[in-house]
Structures are given as C-alpha cells and as structure tokens.
Length: 341
Length: 108
Image (tube, rainbow over all chains, first blue to last red):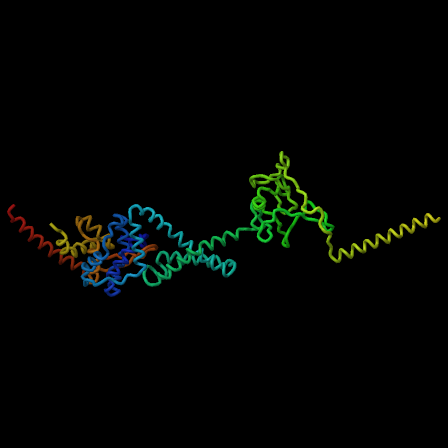
C-alpha cells in the first residue's frame, strides 16, 4: 500500500502557494485550516512535478474551492500580508518567468550550500571573537551546520510562517555581509612566515616602505658580506624581491642559496643581496650568475661606518691593549737587557 | 454539457468508492478519479470532499511522516463510510436507471 516514509521535495512556489491558500482560510479555526492544508504541500508537489508550476492557479479561487467542497463557510478577507510575503511573491513571480526558470532552479538547488556556508561564517565569526576553539569548536561548528540546514528546510524554528522569519532574514543578511570579513580572516591566517613563498608578506619594511637591501658593517665599521639575519624567534628577516623590484624601478635583488641534496633554497635574509637591472621580477635562478649579465654585489652606501662598542667590549679591548702594551714593554726591556750585556 | 454540475452530485460517491478500493492521499485520489474518466475533477474539490467526509466520520486519516519535505496525509474508509457508500451506490443506480429509461424513451 504505502511505504513507511517518503521522500518529497517541496518547490518554493508550492510552499508559497500553500501559504497563500492558508491565508485565505485564516478565518477558519486553526484545526479546520490545518486539516484542510495538511498534506497539501505533498499533493501539490506531485501535481507540479507532473504538470509544471503553471498548474498552480489563483490561491484565492483554490481556497474557495477547498472551502466549498469541504462544506465550510465562504471566507471573508484574507489575512493580512506582511512585507516578507510581498517580497517573496515578487521573487516567485520573477523566478516563474520562462527565461529565468532554469537560473531560479539552479539557485534553488544551491540553497543547501548557503545553509552550510552561513553556519561556517557564523562559526568563524564566533571563533574570531572567542579565540581558537579546539575539539569542542568542531562539535560546535557541526551543530551550527545542522541547525542552519534544519532552519533552511523549515524544520527548526521559526518554520515557514510567523514573525520569527524576520529574524532569519536579518541573520541571513548579516551572514552575507560577514562573508568578506570571514574570507579576509581565512586569507590572512594562511600567511605562515615559516613557509617562504615567492612573495613574502612578512617582508622587511621601514615605515611601511619595503626594505630592498641591507648593508651590514662590523663593530669597527667595516662592510660585511654574507650576513644571515634572523629575528628573535629564529625566523628569517627577508626582503620581498617583488616589492624591491617594483620599488626600485627594476632592480632585482638576487638571493643567496642554501644547497641541499641537489636542490637549493633561495635565501633573502642573507645580506647584502646582489642586484641586477631587469624589466621583470622573474625567479632569480643560480644560472643567472653565469649569464652575460650576472647580478653584482654593489658597493655599500658607506665606505666605512663608525666604530661602535658596548662597555664589556670596550673594557675587554682596553684590557687587551694594556696587556699587549705591557707585553711590548716587557719585550723591549728584555731586548734592552740583552743589548746591555 | 457541463459535467462540473454533475460531478458535484456524485463526488462524494466517487471519492468513497476510490478510497474503499485502496487507501490514498489527496493527489493519489485525484489521479485515480481522473484515470477513471473524471477528467474535469478539480483537485481542491477532491481535497475539500476528503476533509468533509473525514469530518462526517466516513473516512479516517493518518499521516505518513517523511524524512524530508511535508508529511503526506492518507485517507481510509470507515464502517460508516462503507455503509454510506453502499447507500449512495444504490441511490445512484436507481437514479441512473431512471435517467437512462427517460433517455431511451426520448425520440431521437
């Protein structure tokens, strides 16, 4: 006879039509109205599946026919229609136009994606406020997805009717607006400084301007070559070669290389970087060093920097100087004594 | 001839007969009526009739829950409905017999 459970998809126009019919039966006791319209969505879905959405006619006439056949009193004015109903009717009317039908069907098919998407957006927003949520967070996210889908299917509060719908609309708008925020957040969290890429978002800058090269000097003020720089956590302090190329008007910094197992890694934290003028910021390969125009280590901006010191070094130097002086004096004295003999 | 008026008089009988044959939900009943030749029957009229027969105790109804989408409401006939069907069936036979006799006597 009949299967224990059935699977039915209710098209949005059927949902809207049933809601309209119910409005035209609003003067009936709730029990009568429910009796009349319970199962109507299922029946009309069958009808529409067989004959297309155009089979749904005027909800007022339909309600009148239901009422007459059921032997109930003819109705008065339909129940008050809210703003949401008007908006939805306008949408349904638009979606029913032949040239928009397939697009509308496609968008309707995408609704579950949105249900999941808004739950994920809500979770990421909350996680942003509450900080990283461990295992509990995943369960929470899952619960949000289930809840959102049930709301979308009209199975959880507030269903397909009632003032609660306004809250759902507001929440949807909020979720839509939060998508760029969430995407930006997700994008920035993938910038892991431990994984160098061709473009280094964590590159060195001074006052917002990218640093294109660094010229180190020792404490006596002599230029150094091949100085590796790391920050307090051992991360490479690197120059963004694309930014440097662009900023300098076409001067490409060339990295130092870390060779390992036949491969090499480009290091932009070893200074000074060699440079070469070239129109594009293409990948600075080692073979460029043996090309017609190899990159060059430029002369440092200062021939010599001032000598610098800190007290312990100054003291140690002074002690060393005194020791050397004493040693020299002793040597001279010895030489003199030898000559005296 | 407009069959809508005729249909009104016999819709109860037709619906009872269809449901007596086998339980059915609203649109299923509509489909069976149309398949039997009552092509003009409106689905809202059938749903209303089902509801009225249910209120009068001629039909029972039960809801078959669905995992997704709306529940489906099935109707079955009650003993009251069965006796109502039997009575109306006899009335219809007598009525149709009378009309047929009149039509046969009518000069062509």
